[in-house]
Image (cartoon, rainbow, N blue to C red):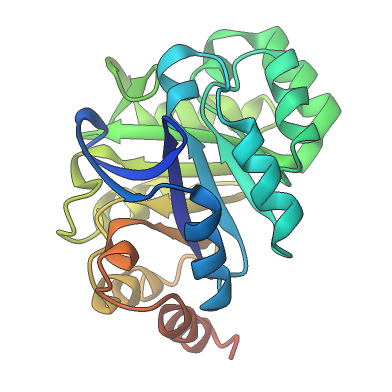
Length: 246
């Protein structure tokens, strides 16, 4: 398992939201590149970037920052936020993103998903974000009545093999991960996923590692590392040890 430091970009700054609420934000770095450099210097192997302006508006708005990060630092980045059209995906790919994260556009537009899978293959990741086990859409701003696991199964049948599973009610709360949700998401999954939401201590990472879920390939962490609850390097060492990778 790998640790993926989160860099959420809003108005050109690295911020963190609470439970996906744009009204509850904290700015940590005026330049997202500085946050990215700090995490890489501390041992990050991959970065998770979200264009929050893009998630809210439906069109990527911070690709210049993504390109600066991708070109300056020698680690792959995965990018989400506003990637809802073929043109947006192409622009994100050209910015240097190694993996491209799409949301509910993958569910609602079969032609879009089919074309994206054909063009990008395993570079394409679908993010399924949940409140109480139900899918949230439009950059977390809209709730649905769809069970996340049912949506995952539907997308699997259409060829998706990489996912991000986010627990919105835990996001930014430092209250611990949704272990039951992660276990349910892993059950029956064909492919792999990365978990996000609620990580506040090294013990939370240990709890996820102890699921022994081979489909869980990484954990996204944001607020905990910005607030120095633990370091990126020590967290990665823990995950390496738990998975026998170091």
